[in-house]
Length: 442
Image 1 (tube, helix red, strand yellow):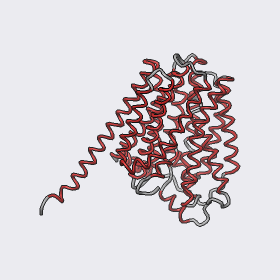
Image 2 (cartoon, one colour):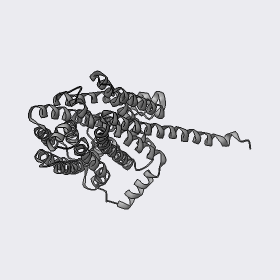
Image 3 (cartoon, rainbow, N blue to C red):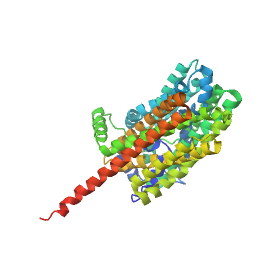
Image 4 (cartoon, one colour):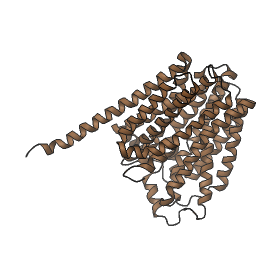
């Protein structure tokens, strides 16, 4: 998702997934730093903890996006439009967005390990039921419950690591969890695509469910007991005051909007791309369509480079570059040549991950208190953007083909550009205001 001068490490960790940077309270980190018996590489429990959270990350994002690569098959099975089928993704991400903040508060009371275990268990059970959904409505409802359950894991994993791992090993430990997130999101889509090509989408969802079961078992057997967690009482009024304070901060509001708009583009493109590639002029089989998600690896590179971009161009300069790259990818993807479409996806993915990296890391730098809640609000906005993008992108595709989806993406990118320009003007005005007293003689 860090040297303070560049923010590089923070950016990498925030970017890789999307749910991860949400919940490391400063107080928690301080408790962790004071404890002498925390986990460290080579020490007892560290390897078990790393494998456990890596497995949990794979399960979380394999389940969360399990239907995205299967939407054309789901549409055909239920006689549904792209917009209707897209709700099997949007319901899960939307429910996760709504539940991240309350479940992060519950983890403060009942424990990180307990919350992660319960969330993963419920999500896995739902994952085994999803392939038997008798209708599209049931499938969407089950996916919503699954997304709500999954919200408890990213809401607790970062705090668990901050409490249990030595500060010098924390970046590496979080990096493994984030790697599990991105690998789960990518491999789940690829596995689903190839299994669906051979045995149908229900078997594909079953395969994802079994993968998640295996990961959940690994997690349960290997995750060490928490030794540094101190329960806190639930205080809804204090939480409400913190959230209200963040939402009244103009810069945080702009960052939340940027995250949501970038994810609107990304959600729209990757929800609809399967429909485009199985249709003429491409006519690709389901397995190849699922393999298109290998493009996600580009995001790992661009998010890692985002720290250097911020150091060289500043946050707004990096956002301008991310906007330009995403827009160029959208326009390039309009071509009817497969190579051009794939190149467009590469640019869209690189621009999105870079922009998300800058925005998400800026949240924790901007919030002076309640950073856990500030980051959780960003995650909520981010996943609401995913839900909106998936559904609106599918509706636009149904109305105007791929060009309709691109128009939606361009509008969202223009929204990011407008917000960034407004931020640049506000920052310039603030600098001039700060400098003006010095210019006036006494």
